[in-house]
Image 1 (cartoon, helix red, strand yellow):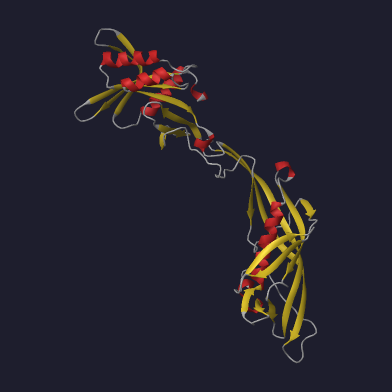
Image 2 (tube, rainbow, N blue to C red; image 1 turned 60 degrees about the vertical axis):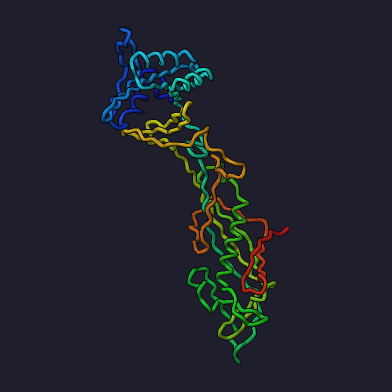
Length: 368
């Protein structure tokens, strides 16, 4: 409301709140002679015409430093009676004393406070937003297998090749399905398992990273040694054309790339104003706002009361928070890191059979 500090500007602002509301005539600074022959000045006079009747509302605008007292209600009530008006209202920016509110309710006069929106009314965390966005992607490199091969043909080649590529296409390749060493039934796909591993490890890596580079934009690369352990699941056999390969452990390096950028904006940037118009008589609450350069004021009705109440369980993002977005395992890294680091711990991913079903549960352990 700092834009309407001057009393005349405040009157023009209230005048704008009424204009455009149907078939109304809104006049400012009106002086009339009442039924007793005395001159009476009204800040805003609203005349509304319907088919057979005319209704007049007298509005007082008080841009004062102190809450309004009861005597202002009595003055307006006298004007309503003397000028034969239908009703009246008072707008202020500082509130009303308890006696004024009681008198206004008794005399049918509306009392409105025009104030700036709270953070809750803007939508938490408030009007001004500043967040840090971290987008994490990763690739698995330098993969090594601990495996034992059982020949399926008389003359097995001296070298077995396994092409394990982390892609959506390979996840559908039946040649990379794992089989149970107990029952021979088909289980999950090795590529799908690597994708689950990728997701689990990257999640742990991002949890260990706080705000980067004092909040400035940056790209950091973190290389983490990892171990995938299939010794605790029966679904650990690959069936190649020449051999059945029992997988034990797989070692690899995860190259994680975290790109940090700052999101900062003002929700009121394109608004000339946005205020709460709150009644102390009828409990009406209405947000009034006008976009630049439009002259039309838009209104949004709110619930009664002092604003939305959030419980302790509500999770509200605070300004300065870091939001992490983890990319799909099939999204690679760009290789443009400005900061590089090597993780000290080994991430161990243990694969276990979930009951009798060919499903895997993946847990991540960090070495001591």
